[in-house]
Length: 443
Ligand code: DLL
Image 1: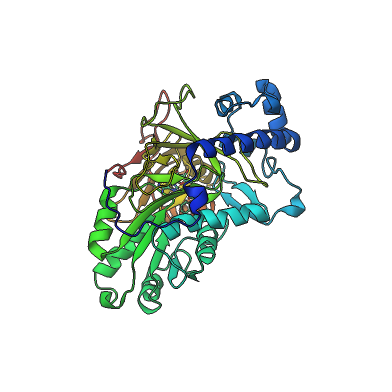
Image 2 (image 1 turned 90 degrees about the vertical axis):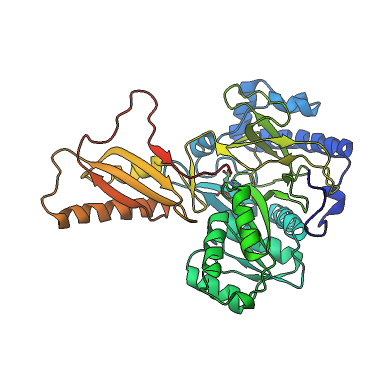
C-alpha cells in the first residue's frame, strides 16, 4: 500500500469521517431502525414489500438484520413511476433530479432541504480531501440538468467556499478557453472528457504555460489507473476518483483520500453491502460483487438495499489517512446491460425503442462501442425491414438521419448509424448479445 500521500491529508468533517467503527456501527443501527419504521409508515411500496418479506420495523435489532430487508431495484422505481418512493409530502421537496431509465423515461429522485445540505457536505468531503480550498476556483464540466453531476458538484464547491465556474458539458473549444483565461485550480468532469481536454491541451490548442490547473475530480463512469497516469504525467496535475449514483444521492457517495487506495464510502450516511449478483448472498471482503446501498439520512427518497448493478470490491482494513470507513475499489463492470457513453447512461433497450419508431428500420441491430482515442464512439448497425429497401442513396440517407435523430432524442447522444441489408446481422437463440464493447475499461 502506498503510505506517502501525494497531497496533504485533510478532512472536511473529521468527526464523522474518522468516527471509531464501534460508534459508527451503533449510529448505523439506530438510523437503520428509524429508517425502516419511517419507510414502512410513509412509502406504500415499502409497506407492501416489508409485509411480503414478513419483516416489521421492530424486527431490526442488529445491523445483520438488514439482510432480512427486501432489495430495491431500478425496476421497482420504474414500476412506481414517477414518484412512488417519495417519503415526504411533495410540498417539502427542494429538488428533483433524474437518470436515464431503460425504457426512455427517466427515473426521478427527490431531495428535501436537509438532503441537499448533506449532499453538499458529502461532495465537499472529497473535494477538500483532494486539495480544493475556499480561495480557489473549480470548473464544472458536468452537465447541469436532471443529471446529478453538475448541480451536485456545484453545491460541494460552494460548500467548501471556493468559486464555481459552471461551464457545463460540451463545447470543447470553449472549455479550453475557460481553462486558459479563467485559470481554474480544479477541473471536474468525466474521465473520458478530462482525457479529451488533456489531449487538447497537449496538442497545443491553448498555451499550456498559462494554465493554473492543480487537479481534477473525475467520476460518473468507469476508468482506469492507466488513464490516471496518462493525465497526471501529461499535465502534471493531481487526479482523483469519486463515485455516486442518482438513486442513492448522486456524486459524494464515495471518494478517494490522499492515499488513493479505494474510495471511502460515507458510511455515516449509507450502509453498503457487496453481494453475489446471482445468489444475493454477501461475498467475502475483497471479493468482487454487486454493491448495494441503503440510505440512512435521506428524507425525501430513502431506499432500502438498492441494487446498483455496479461490480466492485470492499476493503475494511484501516487506511493510513485516519478515515474509518470501508473503501470500494474502482467499478470494473455492471451486472446489467447499461452502457456509460461519455458519462451518459444508455440502455440498449432505448436504442431499440428508437428503432421501433422508424417504420423502415427493423429491431435487428448491433451496437459497437469503441474508444479510438479518448472519447467513446458508438456505432449502431441496423437492418432495414424486408421490402423497405429504398431506391436511392438520398432515400437511404434520409432513413439513416431519422434513425440518428430518434436515437439522439431518446438517449441524448449522437451515434453513427449504418443501415444493413435485411437478414444480414447475427440472430441469437439464447440471450441476445447486441453490444460489442471494444473499450478496455480494466487497465
Ligand atoms: O453518474 C453520479 C455522479 C456524477 C458520480 C458525477 C460522480 C460524478 P448516474 O448518472 O445515476 O449518477 O450514474 C450512476 O455511474 O451506477 C456507476 O455505474 C457509474 N459511476 C459513477 N461514478 C463512477 C466512478 C452519476 N467513479 C452510475 N467509476 C453508477 C465508475 C462510476 N463508474
